[in-house]
Amino acid sequence: MLTRALLPRLAGRLFGLGALLAAGTAGAVTAPMLVVDVDSGKVIYSQGATDPWYPASITKLMTTYVALDMVRQGRASMDQLLTISEAAAAEPPSKMGFKPGTQLTLDNALKIIMVKSANDVAWAIGENLGGSIDGFAAQMNDTAQRLGMRDSHWYNPNGLPDARQWTSARDMAVLARALLRDFPENRELFSISAIQFGRAVMPNHNGLLGRYAGVDGMKTGFICAGGFNVVATANRNGRRIITVVMGQPSARERDLKAADLFDYGYGQSGFSFGGQTLADLPTSSIAAPPDMRPYICDKRRPMPTDADSSAVTAGAAAGGNADNANAQLMAAGAPPSSALAFATMNSAALRNRALPPRAPLQPVLVWTGRDPAESAIAATDEAAPAKAAKAAPRVKLAKPAPHRPAPSRSIAATGATVPQPKLLARQKASAPAAASAFASTGPATAVIAEPKDQKGHKAAARPAVKPAAKPAGKPAQKAEAKDGAKDGAKDVAKSAAKSAAKTQKTAAKSSAHKKDD
Image 1 (tube, rainbow, N blue to C red):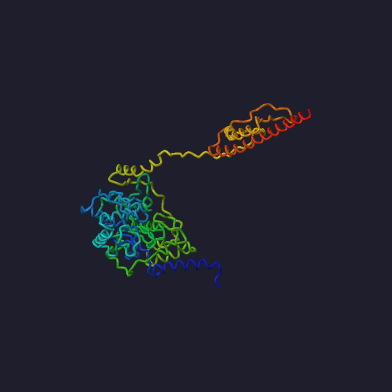
Image 2: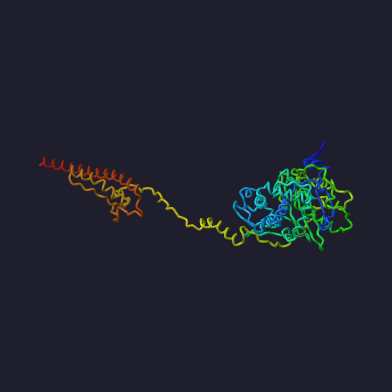
C-alpha cells in the first residue's frame, strides 16, 4: 500500500518518464552536444551530433550566411535598405516592433538578429533578399547543400516553430566553420555584447559572452519543441573551438554545459582526440526530431525565454525528480568511459554552480533609415503628433450656474425679508387688484405693521426688504413673480375687505346716532 509520503515521488517519476516518452523512447533521445577544432575540423567530443533537432533561433546563422554570401557575390549590399512588411511586423517576439514601412540597412539588420534575435527583422531580410520567404528558404537549402550540411531542412529565416524545419549539431558546426572561414571581416558581428537603438540598450542573449574567457560568438535559440540551443565559439592562444549544445531545459544549464565542453576541449591536445572529422560522423538512425515541449515547457510554471537563466526543469516542478530524468536524457547516448560523464551529464552537479558576472556591456549603435540622422528625423516625425496633442491648450467648458433654491415667500407684514426682485414682481401683480378694491370700497390703505418687542413697544425701524446677494435666475424669477402676484393679490384683497368692513361699520354707527338724535 502506498503511503502519502511516496505519492509525490511517484508522481515526479511518472511525469519525468512521460516527458521522455513524449519526446521518444528513453534510450533513443539524446540531447546533442559537439566540440570541434575550427582549424582542423577534428571532432573533440560528440553526442547525438547527427540527430535531427529543431534549431530555433540558431537558424539566424544560416540567414546571415546567405545574406553575406549575396553581398560577396554583388547581389546585395550592406547599405541596402530593407523594408518591414506587414507580414514581418506581425511576427511574434522576440522582435524589434518596427511598424510596416520602416526601413533599415542590411548591416543594421544583421546586427539586430545576432544580438536581439528579432524575428520581424529576420523575416524582412528573407523577404527583401529572396523576393519572398519561400524564395529565401530555397537559397538557404541550396547553400546548406553546397556547404555539406546534410541533415538540414529550412523553411523560414527566423527559426520560429515549423515541424518541417530541422538541423543537427554537426550541420551547425559545419555552418559555424564556414562563417568564420568565408567571412573573416564579419567575425565581429557574432561577438557584439549589446546593441543600442535610441535610448534602449539590448544585451546579447548569449550568456557566455563576457562571462567565459575567450568566447567570441555565436548564437543562441529557444523554442519549446527544441529546448535551449547554442552554437558558441571561443579563442584561446590562437586556438579556436566550436561548441554546440542543444535541447537543454534552461538557458543556465545550456551555458554551464557549454562552458564545461570548452574546458574539456581546451584540455585536450591535437593528438588526443583522434582523427575523426565532421564528415566522418555517422548518419543518425532517427528520422525526425523529438518534440521536447512536454519536458521543456511545463504549464505549471512561467514560460522560459532564451535570456532566462533561472528556469527549472519540469521534473523539479513536478516533485524534485528533475536531476534523475535529466541525467537519463543527457547521458543516454554518451560513451560510458567519456570524461564528460561528470557535470555535463548531470543537472545535480550544476545546481550550485554559476558563471562569473558578465563584463560591462559595450553597445553598438543601430538605427532605422540610411544613417542615424535620418533615423532621428523619422523618430521626430513619428513623435510629433503625440507631442502636438500633448502640448495643445485645453479648452475649458463653462460650468452651468449651480441651482439655488428659491427663498421663502413671506411678506414684510410678518417681519420677514423678501428679495427686491420678488417684491417688485408682487407689487406689479397686485396693482390691478388694489385698483379694483379702491373703486368698490373707496380709498383704502395697506399698512405694513411695524414689529413690536415683547412689551408691545415699537422696535427700532428696519427695512422691510433686504437686497438679495445674488438675483435668482430667470426661471426662478418667473416662478417667484407668479407666486408673488397670487400672494400680493390675496393680501391686498384682505386689507381692502377689512377697510370696507370698517367703513361700513362706521357708517352704520353714524346712521344710528342720527336716528337717536
